[in-house]
Image (cartoon, rainbow, N blue to C red; front, top):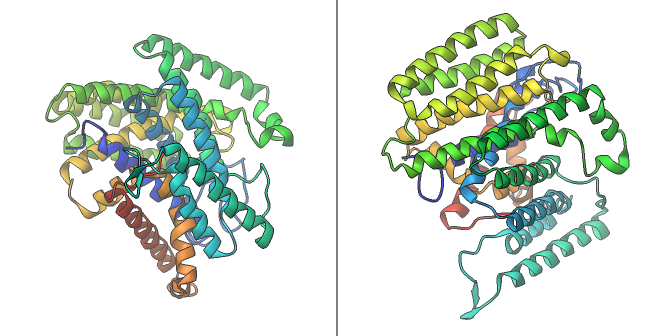
Length: 446
């Protein structure tokens, strides 16, 4: 089974896949692989941003799928308003500290990674030292002091710059998305019509502000862009439908049906095939062929789901609407693009993420004990740690043990596929390491 009373494990698996994609795209050989191996708007060999290039590739799917996983998980967490603002603050802080603890000295980076444990580690019960119960807030304060000390050492002795501009933009953006998305979910629980109207309001806001060129205006202002960009709201077009999917998943699990999270193999194959086809068609700019073939595949998917997996029909209806809408309006505003974020990008990737959840459900139900299933699932349960584990733990550890020299030699000059395989192995190893913490019930949580 992919589900438990505490978690929807397929969601963890899918989140783990996205973290794998994020990490791999950051460390794969640059400038030498085919263009579809990178962000489409950062083509090789220079990877300079070119906002005139339309289309998406697999790397461009990673971030929106992660947003989908975050949105779908919100109903499972059942956050309070106080909890929402608290988690936002911790995510916002994390976006800075994991960047500022990175140092040219690997020992300092490792010390910074260790200092994050008292600050972000989950305590199921009040911790004890020498049989004495210690309040959790003591550990949090100690973590802040340790992190502050590492950052000070980094700045004073290793000339690392302290600046409000130095933050991890992905976590920074996710913090704001979590804040707005969770508040919208909280105030529209059981009021799907209200949530739909909010979504339509954000769609209208997106259209108007894009026409007024607000994203460019806000980004051009240094006093604003370090903390806010109007595009943050655009991604809510993706996140709000994700919270509805989360509601559906909770309802399905509460039914207690044995096959609540088990799609048929044919449904999983067709769903995954549609995602692969759409990615290719968007990349190759096959507008009419994409519309035609995707339309046929959507109808076949509905027919198969109606016959074999009717529990997926509500989610597939939302996915089909978003996929088709994204394809229909693809040429609008210069085509589907991640930068600047376009409406069709949010629509299409949200629908594709829902289809990939069907695939994840099938994999986790069909191969629950498989080695790779476990790696992605356990890493997906620990996303904060997994997100920074390579840069802040694994690679610095390789430096201090001189294993980094073996890593460098594992990429012979000109053998770029070997270099890619090396990167894949390192990411999988990193996720396995995080899985070891997960097995020991050591989690980070904002």
